[in-house]
Amino acid sequence: MRSPATPAGTTFSSRTPSVARIYDHFLGGKDNFASDRDAAGRLTKVVPTITGTARANRAFVQRAVRHAAVAGITQFLDLGCGMPRRRNVHEIAAMTIPDARTVYVDNDPAVLMHARAILAADGTAAAVPGDIRTPDALFKDPVLLDWLDVSRPVVVLLAAVLHHVDDPAGVVTAVRERLAPGSWIVISHACRDAVSPAALDVVKTVYAETGTPITPRPFSEILALFDGLGVVDPGVVEVSQWRPGDGGAHHGTAQAVGGAGICPGGQS
Ligand SMILES: C[S@@+](CC[C@H](N)C(=O)[O-])C[C@H]1O[C@@H](n2cnc3c(N)ncnc32)[C@H](O)[C@@H]1O
Image 1: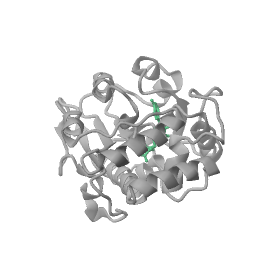
Image 2 (image 1 turned 60 degrees about the horizontal axis):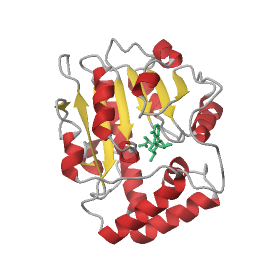
Image 3 (image 1 turned 180 degrees about the horizontal axis):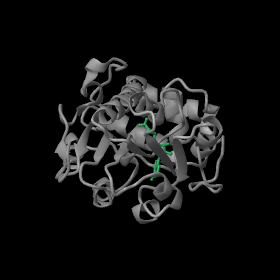
């Protein structure tokens, strides 16, 4: 794996919970601290199904990557990739396309550090620091451009990250404008429809402590993120319902929905 020396994002502190490490804890990982586990505990108190939702989201990402690889896409850009785990995007892609290329992007320096350590020996993936709110800089990154040919179809993963930005539609549009026809945009997003207002307040308070606020949105707003894309069957659904027949699915809840859209003008 190649990666530049200076990651983007805020200063590392084990005393302040982080989005990536809270999620790592929900997935059963070890790359987290007491502050993250405490935050996860407070989230679980108000949303008892949150661990299942996180795991269902991760399984959705893995199935979407496999389907895109089977559809013949050989390049993957994982935006807001999170801590590396077993069955990472590049490993799943390689099961179908051994020379598939993957670029991981995150704005958390700890994620980049772990990516370097765990994926150092891999020759099919690169990691770059970046922020989805600044797509101009992201798509000018020399490592990204060296690694991926964006004039050809790319699978862009925006999984469980758009609920951390104020203007998710703006991010999707900016990404889409930079992609070749036939590229896939895979999105999953926290949905507020199944969460009580009181629980939502606690969720927002806990994530605000990380410095990366969260905004679960109504299903209608998440669906609108796919406007203008050719939506892959079965559409935008609760994440565990997206092509669950492949195995590896976890039972989720309506708290996370997702789907895959294909940029028009190319082969699907
Ligand atoms: C909940 S994790 C999701 C990980 C992975 N995409 C998945 O769905 O399994 C969200 C990740 O997005 C990252 N993130 C949050 N805001 C971001 C931003 N503006 N730009 C890039 N990464 C961001 C966090 O650091 C974290 O690693």
